[in-house]
Image: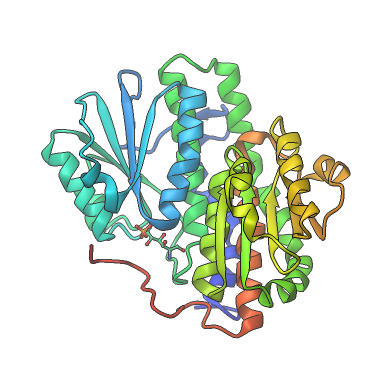
Length: 364
Ligand code: M6R
């Protein structure tokens, strides 16, 4: 039921503070500020050598963000592959690694094939899944549930942020298990997770501004998305969201990669969405932004209050709440979802059932 919303996607975007909150209550103890994994999923990361993450589409981008977290907070090396490519790389599979699959539906053929391949090689299988009765959930050794509820829109939104929330909690757990994080570090990170639903709700208030911007995007032929660090996978996700529901060509790039080729595309007709919280990477991203501005590109900067002060010459700025850097990917996901949504609505496409796409891709 869409309730008062025009599309399931709009409803699912709006539900995110609530469902991310639900997902988090399964993984963190709100009173002690410690991570507590759900029953049956109490995995010990202390003796792992590597983590091998595989997924498709948006779930893959959640995995890309998680790589930064696992490596930084748990010093756990992460391999990550698009599930449809994993087997062709023929990676040597170490007994001491955990294969971690991420899937909303739990039925994606490529992800399932990777699961079975890893299982046949004797690896232990973990799965971050939204549908608890799905094939991937049944075949995994350890299931880390997301609690996004049913996601109807083909473009994944709330499942993505719930995947991020669960992966964030797992990375903190891994950091504790591996003695990289102190109890105090853990509490700091967990309290930033607990703050998330409130900050995400605040971010949703940008909708009116984004709706106006969407009219500019609807006229574009190409759109670029740029980010550094954990904002890079969110740039990739922004481009995927826009492509799949508005059919506008879009690409996400690591901000530093721009001058290695894609900047040749930039002129006054190309909107460039820059995701740049005011963190230690801001200055570098800002200088990439100036390279775009010098070529007439229309910059839409998504940043926090401090970043906005240092923005310089931009077409528009969307100011999101200031948060602990760790949780920024969940906040920056919201404006890019809303931008894709409103651009598609403005263009009159079938937002919930975009052409050529299926909610769950059950063929390889
Ligand atoms: O159900 P899954 O998470 O395994 O699905 C993976 C992709 O097919 C999915 O994320 C797809 O990319 C979405 N349509 C993106 O919005």
